[in-house]
Length: 90
Image (cartoon, rainbow, N blue to C red; front, top):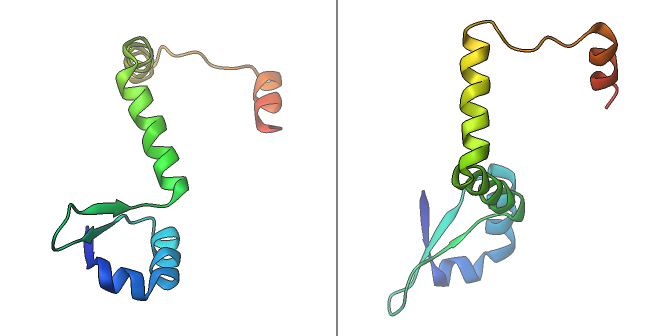
C-alpha cells in the first residue's frame, strides 16, 4: 500500500483521489502527531463491505462451500437451454 503525508495529500487532493479511484488502490495517509488513515474509493469500500458480509455469514459460506464441492464432483445443477437464454438476457 502506498503512503503519503497528510501535507502532500492536502496539496494534491484532486489528483491523488482521481488516482485512487482509477487504480483501485487504497492509500495510507500518515500524520506526524496523529493517527494514520486510509483513503479508498466508494466503489472499493462497498466491495469490501460485501465481501465482509459474505465471509461473516456462516450459512452463506456453507452454501458456497457445498456448491463448490458439488461443482468439483461434476454433480452441480445444469440449467436447460431455456433457462440459460433467460439468464443471458439479464
